[in-house]
Length: 231
Image (cartoon, rainbow, N blue to C red; front, side):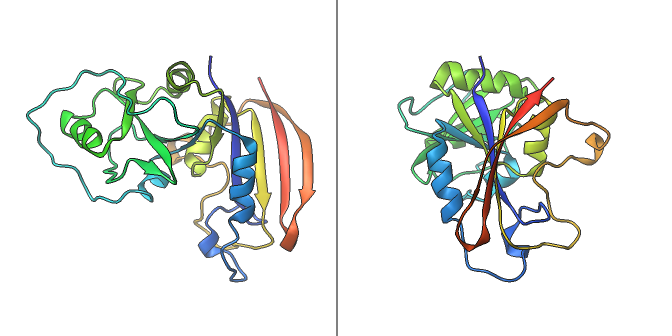
């Protein structure tokens, strides 16, 4: 069984997700996003490698180790209120920390990740497990989160590529979208749901989206919530 997945994101009115590019220039208005994140009540939140890299505090782990580790789950905690889950199939992120905002980090890897990287994760106290031999098996990863950590409700907060991958796989159940009264208006910014170049011809198998609620917040922010009907 996989968790119920809510894609919780904030965009400009043209659907772009990098606040630093929005105009007119504005102060950080993350309070709406953080409050609703807490209210949605997920036992975990999930991002991809690019977003996860933004939280890293080290440049790299040592490239060699004399230790060998079995390709099986390794958890430092199983009793957290919420977990920060990161898809890092090839083991690129050197963390230098064990949590993000108090939420223990859990990294999802492929079995090809070298022992030296696993040694670095263990030294930092970062939990990990494997989903796939050389490419990430996201459905398997979601089932493992449910089985091993009891995650029944997960907030997807990745970049456009990660969000798009799960959407096309029919794994997103709801969208919680904060639309801010700003415009990006320039090419090159990621959108709410995006695709890598090799995935441009793939479309999500969605039958419909049902509006669950809409709310106007202060400063012109609109909160929309949709239920996705997946095929």
